[in-house]
Image (cartoon, rainbow, N blue to C red; front, side, top):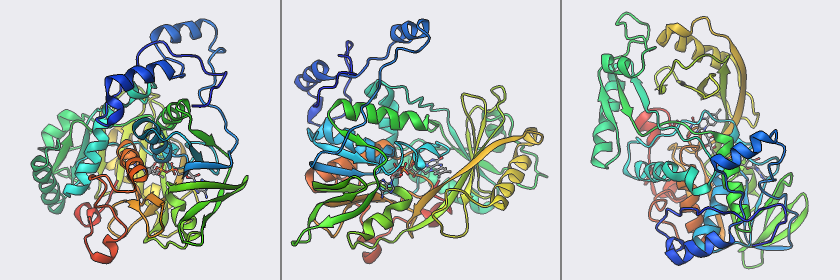
Length: 453
Ligand SMILES: Cc1cc2nc3c(=O)[nH]c(=O)nc-3n(C[C@H](O)[C@H](O)[C@H](O)COP(=O)(O)OP(=O)(O)OC[C@H]3O[C@@H](n4cnc5c(N)ncnc54)[C@H](O)[C@@H]3O)c2cc1C
């Protein structure tokens, strides 16, 4: 690990939670000795508050690229930073760079509506997302960084007979997989979320809801920052404002490194976690992926007092809603109907979403919207991700999360790091191959739920 003067030696113990080799007591002891992160505690918050919050130290250095690395990760979103962190922590690979064309967390990680849940239909998906949910549970303690994970429960509203049948099928399938999900009547749903309109005369009548109690939200920026800080403390270089312009392959076809805005950087292995731009990056290595990139929008209202206790999703009207700690309603809609790399979307789409929200929650009729934005999401034909090896030796990809990859961040990063370190998929991400689009072993969450948020 590179020594860095701007980091203080930490004092308190850091709890390691995973079942990988690093979780032994000996590894814990060594880690506690060398971990240079600022330790956040009530006392440090108080001390810094008294000094006007001017004495906080820089949380990670802005690294200049070295000539060569064991592993380069393209993209400093939550997935890329998380993979770098787990490579260092669980596999002892610290000669790693995360290369980002813009600023850390400035992609979809910092633009999403932060819904976290794991009640997907298929065994493969629920296993992956539930693995992520297990990691979300202790992530703040693990990173010693408050990612504000709030398991406040997520209601998925059923507005028609098809929704009822489909969500009840999800509830049964989830229970068989040990995944928390249960069916609520309209009155039970209203008791859980009082602003809900359950009048049978409503334009979108609520015929019931599936509730995952463990589901919730987290603070998106903090996830990127927490992973960045913890990865940098273990020696990972985080290089911002440095676009990867090509992946270079050698005479034997294997990966040699990446061409970047700051020159060529050699690497034994390259992992691509570039979300909406994955197909562009992978194309430079002559790997074609079954991906389409779409704009996806979100918006927030003016802040109000706490009134909305949970997350609510309505797939039928394509609206998603929660209330942030600042008081703003955080609202998401569906993807635009055309492919594009633009990080903004069409107004008609969010007008439709807001009209539906006013029908389902009439108390919000007179609220004003504060701002809207968009991201570029990468969508596969079955709406499930691709996490694993590629036809190119030592080139790996983690993509295709579409509208729903934030919730997967710790689980995807964790299994992606395993795949890169061992050149072999983790049992949890093993089904999420590129080959499934040729063999037909799809994980068709799109058909199961109509959306994959
Ligand atoms: C509006 C919106 C709402 C969403 N809501 C939810 C939700 O509620 N729940 C949920 O689970 N998911 C949601 N998602 C999806 C979720 O945000 C993404 O699936 C997830 O954040 C992807 O994380 P990532 O780290 O892979 O990608 P990103 O955070 O996008 O990181 C990829 C990084 O790669 C960088 N990059 C790209 N090309 C290059 C290059 N050539 N060189 C170097 N760097 C490059 C980008 O700048 C970017 O920072 C939403 C997405 C959007 C846009």
